[in-house]
Length: 164
Image (cartoon, rainbow, N blue to C red; front, side, top):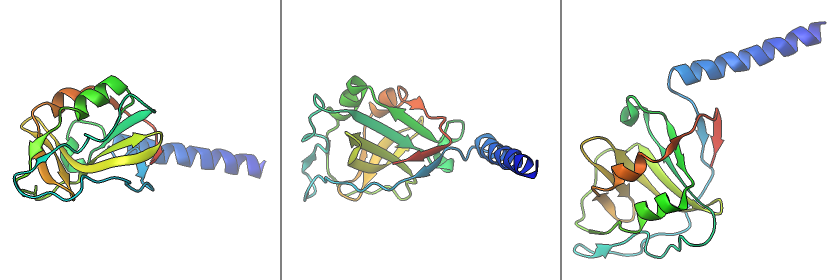
């Protein structure tokens, strides 16, 4: 009888913890163990940068994630996912900009792009009503007017724990 009570208590405790995390906006818990495999290479001010140019979106299983920090999300969820190849291709292929050496001061959210469960691109991301863009260690700050259109097509993830 004690084992049954203990089991019920443990299950109830886990449910309450995840319920609290969900209600306070801290779910899902994201554990990132991936390592990026590609970069855009060396660039100088004035170069045109196409960070997704070498990616072939016609092959493999593509998945993109938006992992938003508490500061960035306000009324949004914490994790968004898109596995629609058309949306991902439309988001990435036209993304070109001229490198100007600029950096965004603080970017806490992330954009992660996977091909067959292997990370092929990661960057900081800003997603808000005024502007959106990527902040990368490789190319600095790059903004684009079309990101919001595609980010709005990502689906919110309600999983309690997510491993990358």
